[in-house]
Length: 412
Image 1 (spheres, rainbow, N blue to C red):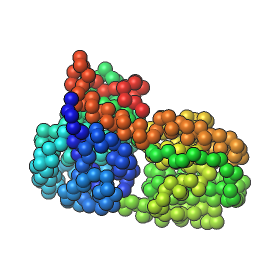
Image 2: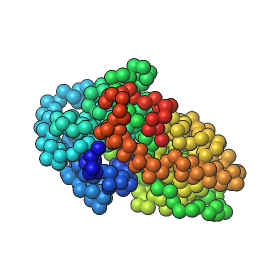
Image 3: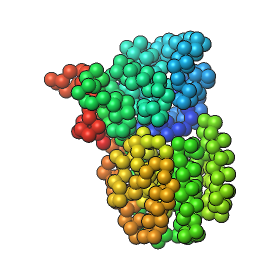
Image 4: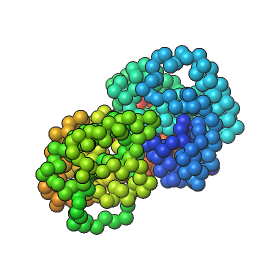
């Protein structure tokens, strides 16, 4: 074993603060410096670089905005054969390979789809071990079919280990039965985590009672479903305040205008409020009585869900992706079908009619986060992945089958 910390270079393609980038920032805060020497390399400068500068050394190697800002929805086969983009990507990989060799790191830990491909290949060329931290569901409802096939194929040859943020994420990346996954590298399920706020003292619900949906404004996040559900119960609960917390990113302003028009047409103006981007998201969640998650396709994990649970809020969430791994239906929250405003409205009404049940549900949710979804636990499990990659247990081959999503292994 080494008598020094493992040198890990974390790579992300963007410096904007999306969900994956916030999860990376949280992880870097809690990795043990005696175990891991951290550096970060980003393909652009921006807010993430500034936030990480206090946690580790940050390198910026600029990638063409044309490539960096390509949206996942456009990653079809034609995009792979655009000569200018191919040439620019290859040139960037060469520059990145040289930079990684200079850093003399042990492991390159990539954090996003573009960094898995570009950063992973460069790390391989530099002779480093590669860990893909997969935070996207590689499935046809989330990505174009060609991109799904490409990423699944490369997942068998580029990384030495894969960390998936949920069993659902791992299953989407490698949907074949375990017996057919022999060609895969080591694979682990490590759920993301959050900080547990200080002790929660239950208080009587204030007026108005606030129900909020937190997350960037995007069609697949389901703000339109939340608005329609609110319209169904607004007359029964005229004192309830519905809040949409978040702002559009990545050219989704048209959807924001659409849902504001929808709210106006449903005459929700007095009860529905758009709060926009909120810097102190923990305070915003703390002021809610009920947190709603309404994604219309399976969420890879659900960071906002565990944040709400940690704050002892009863959560209503759509049943899909990694959410059922977090929320125990009718115990630590309520699960509803995706794209079903009637079911969402019924769930909100159930909690509003029984505030005692809602309070108890929130307290059980907080305890579940304490036991399974703290960021300290996440960091320890990631450190364990590094150890297993660098020093596999005696008697086990370097390459092994992927762990079953239902198995033991690293599953959080």
